[in-house]
Amino acid sequence: MHLTLLPYIKASGELKTKPTQHSVKELRSIGLAPDILVCRSEGPIPVKEREKLALFCNVRPDAVIAAQDLSTIYDAPLAYHREGLDQAVLDAFQIAPAPKPDLSRWEDVSDRIHNPEGEVRVAIVGKYTQLEDAYKSIAEALTHGGMANRVKVRAEWIDAEIFDSEDPAPHLEGFHAILVPGGFGERGTEGKIKAAEFARTRKIPYLGICLGMQMAVIEAARNLAGLAKAGSEEFDHEAGQKRFEPIVYHLKEWVQGNYKVTRKANDDKGGTMRLGAYDAVLAEGSRVAEAYGTTTIEERHRHRYEVDIKYRDKLEKCGLMFSGLSPDGKLPEIVEIKDHPWYIGVQFHPELKSKPFAPHPLFRDFVRAAKDVSRLV
Image (cartoon, rainbow, N blue to C red):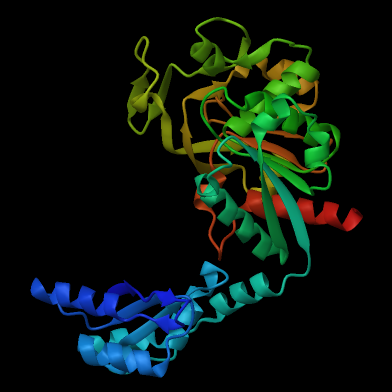
């Protein structure tokens, strides 16, 4: 199977097959001959061009598969089936006719995307907004959450650094939910803290992921617990001076698999990250336990800094519940505010486990909370 590009020349109104012909010629020169051509194009491939490709590339006409632009990637399985790709593969392997495939789950996904029953606006306040693919997995997880609730999620990217000099209210008013994703370094963190404060005080659904959880904890420490200098050891490390009370610190030692990982002196890179899947225990009756439907979970991590458990009592007295902890009770994994429509911060990355057929429960419930807000507006 050979994937090629059929460029469309708008000025002449032509779909050019020569690049594909030359590509197949080069493959043949090294002894490879494709059985199927999957041709990327902006639109359908006319019969004349299909026949030309089949003739000059020595493949059957029904083995020339159009892979045209789609409004969503989740239409791809249905589109390829309509083009006959599955049958072309069976024919190439000389496999007897197969039963008609059951694509009902993909049909349901497509229907939920193209026929939503509403729309929600979600502000993603981050530091890498110039390149939206930096948050691609989060955008897809939000789409999955939208499918589960049969709404369209309109994610809008806001540079956290804007809030260093501007009031966040004009930028965040009108959104049905706010998401603060992960990141490294101090840049943009004060803006993320202001976004967390806006969501908390305005009762707007909030999801903080990794650094987004840490910023929510720092915001609560400053504005609810009276710790005016609350901050992260990460920021002091970058500045080379002690400016903050480290509510968030660099974890020195933890167990990964069967090995104890210890941070070396002056070593803050690479192997010092808490990376991969770790277990967590959820508090009975918490919002996250309700979302997951269980009190034991496993989630994927990618970070070096942790919220300091010693501040738990002080923060919980102010309403910030530590609703998820590592099995030994030493590492905060989830925080939430119960007296809020939906306010959750997680140290892990739930977006990495979300799927179109199985939306992550946190993204599902986050979008549901946004949907509830949209109904009130």
